[in-house]
Amino acid sequence: MQRIYEFLKAAGTYYLATMDGDQPRVRPFGTVDIFNGKLGIQTGMKKELFKQIEKNPKVEICAMNEGKWIRVEGEMYADDSVEAAEHMLESYPQLRGMYTPGDGNCVVLYFKSGKATICSFTEAPVVIEF
Image (cartoon, rainbow, N blue to C red):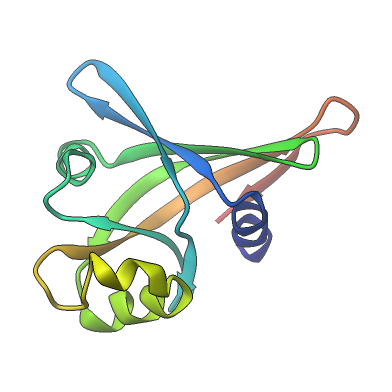
């Protein structure tokens, strides 16, 4: 899991795919954290993304960095605890203007379990189950 975290952190921006009914939705993201042994991202409960994940928790993340790309697939669940939000916002203080732990909007989404595949054109894929 640490390798996945480091790849996404180094990439800076990754793309998160959800389903909206039968229509895929993809948007750029940049938050990533490990808290209590879980890989997570942060968003707002009022966003369509959150509503889509509540209906269908299956997601996929994709990012590129230094000629390699990663795909992370799995199911996500919400942790709206103050502790999870505070840990995330310590790493991303610029989000404190939009989110406050315990504000009823800030939520951290964690992977229950998943699989990451790191690929390139020159090396064999690396698969990480977590």
